Length: 192
Image (cartoon, rainbow, N blue to C red; front, top):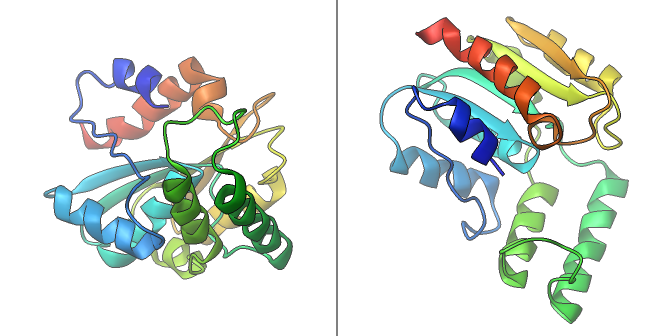
């Protein structure tokens, strides 16, 4: 997923940890990621990775210098989204990974990840208290995370801002990698 960004980040010490296989709790994921890294971090996460990034900032705010999130809301899942995730878990339990899903993750890993997303704590307070630069990238055509919601969320952060990717959906880093790379490099330039 991050291959186009790694090409752009040759002058940076970039890590792209695998999130699948870390269990059914975003807090556990964040604890594992913190144990696997040292020092200060600028954390970039898209969708599920953004939720993990918010947990990193919750658990170790002194280590997280900046946050760049794409398609990641700070709030917990709404009831209808939780119901969708419950249905997905049932399908994965009964049928395994659907063939149309292009993933190397196992059904068990997808079930755990879905539970982690479904049960994630509200991170609105993390955004409000985050002292570093906070950039929220959102696709103009994202059906899961609206531009209005993204603007409202970014306004909560003391140093928050939004970058809109017109024509992109939920993953602007995948759908518009060249533009995303430009935005990412500009964001990282604050620390070089």
